[in-house]
Length: 191
Image (cartoon, rainbow, N blue to C red):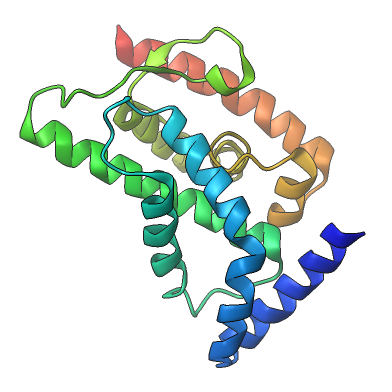
């Protein structure tokens, strides 16, 4: 019940903020901060051990980018968290690309695509994964978005379904297809 009430409050504050109520943003941050840190920690646990960004810094950078998104029609808390996860992924990809530009290979940590689910998977770097996601998005934007929301954002099927305005069963089908497609694309790029 508290989660549902928090979600309603967050949605109201997001709408108020878009309408120009600056105080609404101040009320929203404490409500979503722990979730933003959890998403940031998920992202960073897949990075190399000597990564210079910490979860707090990643949350703050993503949050500053989010507050510039005034044209977004904020529908709910899940949508906000989904966009935050996408921004964190982009920040980390840009960071990895900058580092790789400094030194060939850039010390990118290889990670398993399904490491978070304790399943074996192909080893990829963040930049390769981002490229594969961009190719998937060109073929089917919703399936790529499901990967972002589920894998990077840590959202459940139900939460991702809410963000995408589809059923949880559709998210599960998209998740299965997108994972298989990414495995094949990443194996192909590794060859």
